[in-house]
Each structure stands twice: as structure tokens, then as C-alpha cells.
Image (cartoon, rainbow, N blue to C red; front, side, top):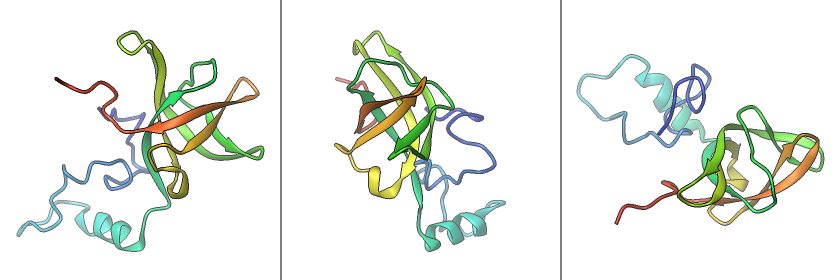
Length: 127
């Protein structure tokens, strides 16, 4: 679930946050900000919120950078150790080219680039 101040804030739009299902862009009475969301969608996304599972040892926390070749490309919004999955998991905004399920990303954890894999969400599927 998206949490205001973490996954969503005044700098994000519902499309890049994966919340398009919440905003109805074709309603007869548009909501406040509808035109801005439509404009962002038409312009195209530059980043997307994705789920990830750590492959290397470490827990990515809010504010850690997603990196490539020493440059910050994105940012972790939430991260923790999942007791249900027994894996370190998290959410991060990444460039569109890295947002596909199965993509490998690196997260700077205390100065070390650690490997994570983009996965589909929700992390725990209902039966």
C-alpha cells in the first residue's frame, strides 16, 4: 500500500505510483488535478514505483539511492525484512528502463552497491 510521505507526495503522480486504478480520468466531472495527471500520462513516464527483493545481503531503507555506475538513478521509498517471506523487500522509484519485473537494480546501502531484483507486487499473494 502506498503511504503518503513515502511512496506518494506532492512530487509524484498516480500513474508513476501505480495508482491509475484510483483516479478515473474519463469521468464526466473531473477531479481537482485531473488535467495535470492527464498531461503527465500523455508526456510519458520517466520513472515508476516498483517492488524489489534484495539478492545481496542488506536491507534497503527509505531514502537509499538506486544506483548505476556510481550515479543515483532512483530512490527507495520503503524497505524492511519480511518475516512472512524471510526476505528483505522494498519499494523504489526507478527509471522506466529498469522497471520491468526481473530487472536487476543496485541499491547503495552504506556505501556499497547491493543487488536487488524488481518483482511484481503485492509481495505476498493471497490464496
